[in-house]
Image (tube, rainbow, N blue to C red):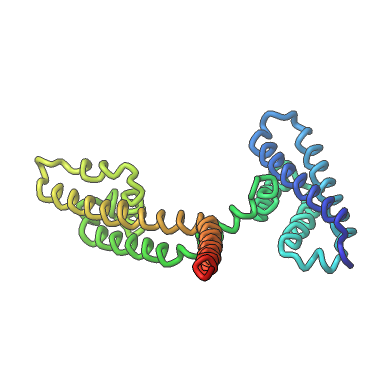
Length: 261
């Protein structure tokens, strides 16, 4: 069963409308305390009715087989079934909260954003290309966390008392978040050597992790994010070079003809 151009256009309009409904459901969830006591149940019923009609309409356009073969549609259908089972004994929290997870199918939201599909492709490409950098960051994070735990677990237990606490402390230094609190937590006059050691450790982690590693990760991520535009520019440059070569050949041929005359 082929979908006609008119049906495709209708399908896209429904997807855009559903994206707005998803956003509205988020707004309802975060402002539910502003509504009268029974209003959320009516709103919830309306949303369930809308998504049920959306399901019926899409199955009518695509057929059940084509509809269920799409992963995004599978997720929507699963939410619809769960929502239907919860409605008899649920309030706003149970079903509307499930609607929030429709944002996992982020394509719906990107349909209402100009060039949204290109942005989504760029994000996917950037995440895939950043795997090595993310592994490097995690390795550095674990390495410095274990060193901090080994060196300062007894002397500064509030920051390095356990491996997880140490991990959280090093992560804060990586993000350059309140990194100055760590060395300042030690009295410089009472414990000068501990203060110097902790200060040196913080500076090393800050430079290697916070400045170099994180900056490298940002550079790789941004480069891959905009690489689609770079590829287009490269193709245009190649076309211009080819055209330039052709023009040169034509000019050379013309010059030869003039000389022969």
